[in-house]
Image (tube, rainbow over all chains, first blue to last red):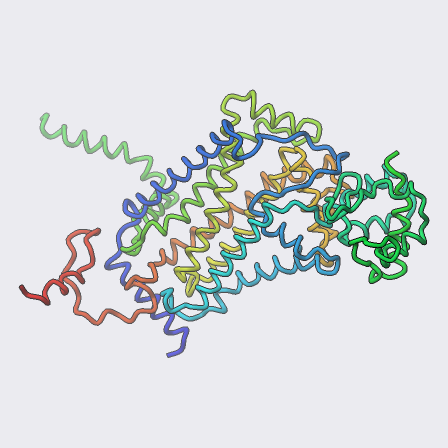
Length: 264
Length: 269
């Protein structure tokens, strides 16, 4: 008997049993469904009451949207935190696409093909170790990613990048292609993990604010040398070298820094 | 005379009362359909685990109703969106409740969806012949997440705006179609007035329509294929037929399985 015949026979047994031993949906199952539905509606109403009268669930509404501000760290709704945190894991430019498209698409495909991969008729959990492990791993990883996403503070590349047009306007390098390219590199290369720039980023390890770096007029060549080996130019600097970015990119980055004369 | 007219009068009264139903049944078959839906047999050991699906449906209905009410007051325009939401929250009678239910109902809807999916996975209920319904369920999950994403912009406060900026940027990183998708979502090169009305239309027309269609298909497949029995059930598809002789007919539908009788017989004290 082929596997499909077995499954068909199993489904026929199910149908026969339900016909002889089953109970009607109304009122038996419907009773459970109705009680559960009332619980759901009560929970929803309860949450909105808690939202209205306490601050546990956050503010009722924030300040009006203002495309001009740039130091606002965006937060998606909580059920996107796991995706949100993936972006922080894969923050290097070459890997961002893994977090934004690669992994979510892979998860979706895995879910869609599940019934065609797991074709055994066995449904008892005690005999489905792979399914148990897969379920546990999914729950744990989603839980961890959601928690990390909820507590994450640092800005991520795609958030920083969104701020570039306003930087260009404030610093007056809108027409400087080289500086714009440098700003883009600045946003995606992890600079804002330690430096702040016009309110974006976070200051770690005593790294200075770079909003007015250009006003020191140190020169493009100094900036390139410093980026290649910070501790050679500035003994004791904990900043890692960025020589790996390559000559062209370093020049763009240096131009961007020199063009940052402080907000006009 | 009175004795013969009286029963015929009640009869005719009952007939009159049932007439609209009969009329409807004769022309549509809907009454029979509802009767089939309500009185179809489900496995005797369905439990509270099986209520997660209908609980998800309830959360969706809450979203539909509160969403329709919110749409009566909401203004999808960059200059008045935020103030209309403030107006709903502070001035409209019961507005805070309706908006709160829509806001938190969305979270409850998503949680219940994940729980329902987990239940279906652990019960192995996605297996033959219910593969297609699993796929419909996965599509429902993806569609519902997209509904949450588009709804998040509508209050048009700082969080909403910047989260959407990031979400659209993320969309734009997809290979080939990414920039195209991002520009469709934005309604142009920049996030602006067109983005808000576009998100509003997607959020209250396109995606809910898709959700309703998929839910209809989901329910149709459930009714057609039957509710899955729990994996520990004898009705579970993998078990061979019961070798025991048929049990005596059960007197009630909720009476425990007759296996207990065999256990009791053995000690014979």
